[in-house]
Image (cartoon, rainbow, N blue to C red):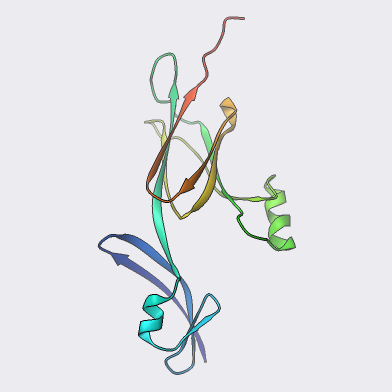
Length: 152
């Protein structure tokens, strides 16, 4: 009998997320396609994903003040091959090789704070034509400064 178990483990060194684990009868687990027979294998299995905080701030260059209510989009850049179904879904979002993770507006202090697993992400502020690609391997802060407006 198959049982789906969502496991969330919080360690002292940080939060890690274990993807879905499926029991295969008895004591064996099937995690991300790997059959785990005992707890030692389970602990050593590479199914842990570290979660990091990504902070995006948008600031006015002339007044040095945060800009609120600006749309910020965060995409996960696909590293490996994707299925045609995933490609079609991503294409609907206008980005065939990126997955839209979140689209939100900045808060009153001009920032967006999100938590994602390790990976490569692209942050876009369409209103000002700004974007930044980053590899999330630790907590990260990205600062976008609105370009100066010229009189001409």
